[in-house]
Length: 503
Image (cartoon, rainbow, N blue to C red; front, side, top):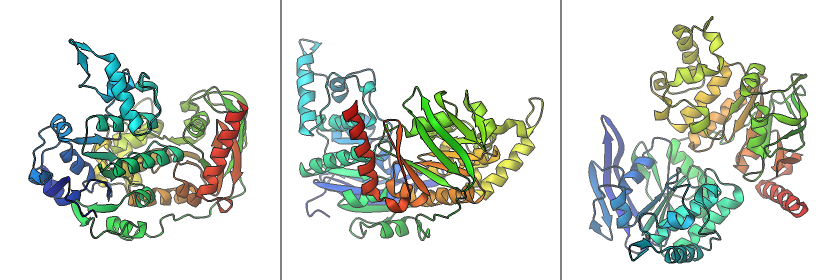
């Protein structure tokens, strides 16, 4: 912890929603020149706490102080004016505007009543230069990569002279090299004296980056920054207690080939991909962001039709024109973005589970609610999903429960091949272990699993074999024992560089 006085401080902060206390007497200090980690399981109060600091929620008790003086933040605009900049998972950028316009949105420089475009571009260029970001100030934000958009968000904070920058799960959609660049940027901001509050489920990143960490559990401080060890075993045990083996991998792979793909090519970044998946096997897919992993998943699920190549499922040739045909054949997809692609947020858990196989609930277009409830209750019980999923809309469930509901859907549909695209993204360590155990249950039942993950440790620990994607091609297949995280990165990055040189 810094010996300097805190720039921002919360003392006994409390927030209630009806009978539920989401944040209960939380205190923490945020110092300039320090990266402060904030971690906790889903529902621990992290999001509620940062929304109070950002002016989105008003506390029911406690005090927020800036430079030792109490301050109220009635709304987000007041928080921004006071020097709080929050980079949420969903960016607050205007896609149709330029980088410069987004950086100074609401504060465009003017000259004789008109926008001073020259001054705007110059100011934006200076801010980007300050953080060594090579982004065209005239570029349209909607055409930037996710990593570049995140840099624009941070540039907005610097342009507003924010005294604290809050980052909420900033690496969720980033590849390995992009995470490294973000961390380098945050270290430079720390060296400039900025206070940074860093929220992440990826504990390895927290250990690698932060100076201290506060751990929340059930809305309270389970371990303060002064008490917490910045070490994964301590953080896991403090957050959720003993969860057993972090990666409880079971060996269930057989010699029975479930999926055979030969020369698979689509118009969407997949070129000449060949591999097999066996029953009981977890076939991992690694590679940098944009390498074609998700596009290959789309091809296997019938979302991107084949231009050429062959796919066999259970030794029978298949060629899916759409997702409906893939589902009927026994292929399941747990998509990368469960919020936009995987769930119906205005439905409760049971309708989300049954949606892929409504024909099993009745005949002649009629659905039996009793059958739906019977099947839903069994899967909720078997997968240890919260019982409130029966009546509560899934948008109000934790990320771990949401992910289990998507998997339950495909169990109900009796799928054989499960394509899991970033299945543990944005969920806490306890929910991650639950997903890993579900993977074990799938493979023990003779299902095949394709695991796509940007978490190298997860990929190497939970896979029987790992394929490496680069520029839409599968450039190598390895046993996990042949690779470590460094070798995996070198292999995928090296292949990417070689293909760049050839192009």
